[in-house]
Length: 617
Image 1: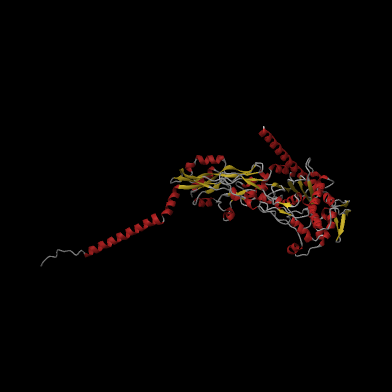
Image 2: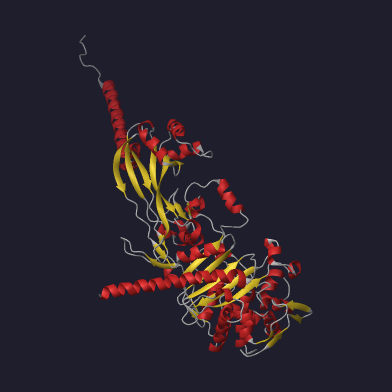
């Protein structure tokens, strides 16, 4: 029997084929995985790898400067330092607590959680001693960084607080708002005033510093740095020296002052008293500080110049005189008698002078602020007609000044009363409106605009704080809103009407009128006083201002302009709960501000003449 020398290799071949298949499949999976890692998700992993050794440290852009019309700085920046943590390292945070006292309300868990995503704020605006301690132990504090942050500084403190406003840290709601597009978490943005209106231009563009760290988070060096871009700077039309005078004159009293250039609407002064220190908002601002400001009974955060609504008192007689003249009810020579009171519709209405003014014409009635004259006009003028002329002067609507949160005031009429109170209009209410009482409400900026309209013979310019954008390295772009200034408008009244109003206001200051305390030597000042009641006459009858509780004292007004020919400044002063009426409380403040304005002008003219003489020689 012969031997079979051939072995059956088919099982072996099958096993080898299966092994090759497994190798091919594994190799294919490896190739697929390599493709996924290197090609499909290569960028993602590259960024993750970079993040393991690169830490982006944001650099805040300095905000642009804000200056007054003479170049004095209203808002600038000061250096400050924030302590941040860019890694979830509880040991580092504990070490920092031993070096730097942290705020009591700091949420440590939140800091560690945010540190996983990027630099998390541990403490802002730390002192230079704290900076030194952290820097000296930087090797022991992986993930901790000192971030330089330019912080807003207002060198004049509260002198122009209600104009410039203040900044504050971006809130979560603001982070999503289009108004603050481009702002980043922890950025400080404009919250009020000019800082808010022109925030987009003032805030600039943030930079970033990418630093290299080692495996334990210690800093090794700077890979790249994108420098921040300064915000644009702006010059305002206000003159801080006028604010200084107003602040000194107001003292502890509350109120507002607005001064405009009636030729173009530039705001020369706009101040509200009491004020607040906007520097308080530039750094850490604890709950107690905020609560104190909000609960202050004197309301320092309120801008009384554009948000305070007051009865205009006798200043409204300018509107009444305009309506009566334009409607042909009276002429400048029309005389009426004043015995100290008038009985109308079954009620007695009193004049400011108990003994009466005797027989007066319209110019004398304006100058001496005779209530009886205008009481007698009330039955001859429908409230709708009075309201129409009031609105013609810009009352009852916002002036569109470039400040946020301006209120409109109120010009009442029957339609308003039906909507607001579901009641009809009564004739006796028109008598109160005739002397600026009742439901009519105005703001100080509206009163300054009214004075300016009278001074120019009916030309109204919208008030404007923006003067110019300061030169910068980049091509100048128009500021938002700066290119949308509403055009001036004319009232369209008869020239005779303006002549009567102007003569009455001139005599009020320079004749036997109520505004004599506003006289300025060498300058022809024209004006009108007003005293608006804040309590029913029965509660304050036969009592002196000094003897009343402060909350029951009347508000005092003065509005005016100067000089008489070619006027260059129109002014409104409001003193809340004043001792004395407009002539005693408000007119002297206006005088002081007008004196400073014309003194400044004389100094400028003298300097110009000196420079011209030097240039000639």
